[in-house]
Figure: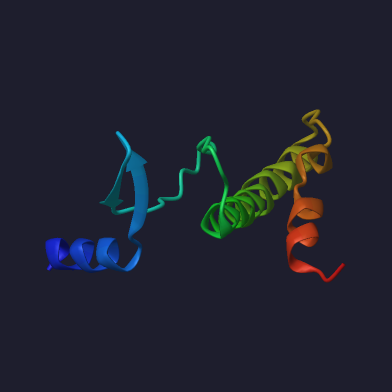
Length: 99
């Protein structure tokens, strides 16, 4: 089943590349890399979607993890840094909202 799905996805997302002066087919799949972004010669819509998904995941992680830890630390009297400095909601708004 996995091989079938990969073949179908590759067939659907086919790209063409020019190698040695010849037009060649090449399949393409983009995967979300939570630890950073890939560097491509040209960024396309799918890269924007990957970046957007990564920002949403990071925002969820910040909200769920840091804010709960911040509340706990404040309750225990532990000094903490300002977690709002790592808030990426501005990036998300830039993508989600109309100009």
